Image (cartoon, helix red, strand yellow):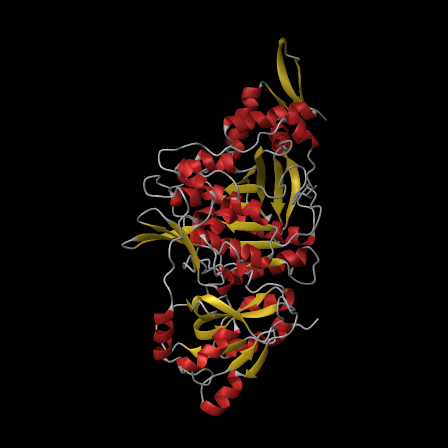
Length: 586
């Protein structure tokens, strides 16, 4: 199969166009965020992953005339369209290419099938892409490169006079009445679209309201993510409804067609003003649920630590090394290497977006970790964005940008470091923080990705922020310093498995963390300093608190773990048999 994208993208970039891979069989890119310019490194990634895809260019500063019928082709000479670069699509329709020359033009379509495409929300397949239906290649008849050799520019300016002629011939869509839809009945279009999760923007005109849709209801290739309004539902002041799309494919579509595409044969009575009948879905009983089959999905980290499509919060005080261990875990996930005592069933694609460390520092850490793991090179399935890339997940466009990077990397795990760099909320505001995190849950389920979120402790070196963060996390791990080289991994919450005991780790010179003990490790160290015996749990807890700075509840938990594991035991005090003491077992 010919590698269309890999072999040709550079030619189009060099003449100032913005190119994207487009899967064969479609007419639009699947890359999220295509309305914005991709970072240069994206092309190297796409050249590997999408080598055989078609090539699609955005029409930011271009005009393409596309006659979609013989009548439209025959009509062109009457407009006085000048010569220009020409291309044939795979079904032999002719595309004429021009520059907008700094003018602000909008897409237009005539009833005879002539379509004028232009602007950042528009795009076209270019030669030598393969036509989705005929499987024949697009071809240049007169290419931009040939045109430049003769005229000094890649594309001639599109005559404004021709644009005005076409614009003057565009017919305004007439609202199409459906019986019973009148102002008296009061059909609420906004509530209807919201209920079926159709994104839109509203534009009020003197005699009608236009609901500009985020997507065409009948052809995905017509979708414009920025809600440009190529497809719209129109409601007149008399309540009558119509549907209009600027694409020839949708000619003749009515409100009835739009309603069928959105809600099928379902009743729409609840969307009339005054009628608040809720939409009910069929109930399911437990027997039906028991009979359902769900695909088995391998966890990212076993033992319930990080199942697929879940979220982990990895929290600790500043300077404790959270970012370092996050990088190590990311590399281990990329290679399917176990993390501490937990099995990693398979290698994963990982996207890491960290905001606190320069790329040079990240490079050094990756090199050291890979050297310590005896890896010959850094993993090619660990992806990073630029440190300068900004996100505020309160904004829908930034949420989509994050989703776009996840899709670009085809990531199965996404590490965000730290949480505070991805929002502008008060972290003590439960409602605001839950809203942010629930948005990540939507991405997680939609794109089958697990999140690891690095989070800071507060000034008192305890868990910081709203309880909503703790509630959202499937797994919550505290990472705390006890000595210069030793850290506690405290499993504060594990929703999908048994909660492990605290693990003590030590970091070596290659930034790798090795287990040196569990929660009982420190109990043993203190008991040895106390000559193997202490008068009570209260005394031992105080000794742990004094030496390591534990909270009393944590210290007592470690002591109960040691009793349960048989590291220490209660015995009679030889000096006073009425009392019990704690003794370190040898």
